[in-house]
Length: 194
Image (cartoon, rainbow, N blue to C red; front, side, top):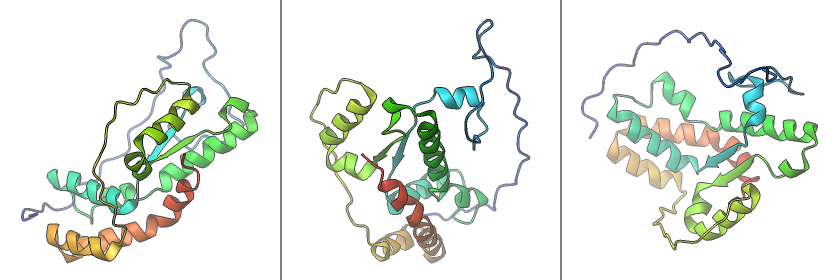
């Protein structure tokens, strides 16, 4: 399928981030200090105003989906972007940051935040997951009876065969390596899913 593979894309320099404070109106306080270091490029005042929801899915499915999308644009499992995308490290950093932030801020109404939604549970039990999510976010839930099909196999060796057919053995090995390397962060986040 992937007969035309372009060489890795060239690296570009990181952009310079300038905060023009376009979200600040009038004499509103523009800068706040968080009780812990902010791990993002976003200003502290914006981070403090967010209510984070992390959606995770088993790496077997997530990374396969990423590869399909990346190959459309000439990406491969060997590009530097793949190493950045095929991980749950970034989500775990954000989860840990917000959990510590809410604990230090002593925010009773955010005791269950950030919210982690397991995409597989969402497919298996859409109504139950949406009811939990809506209760945590104070949103009304009206069941519309939507159902989804699910690929339930979590056997990486079984997926290796599919990946080899879809791409090749090297890509399949790279996907397997990424799945195995991300399992610790995925399982950590999964413990906190609703």
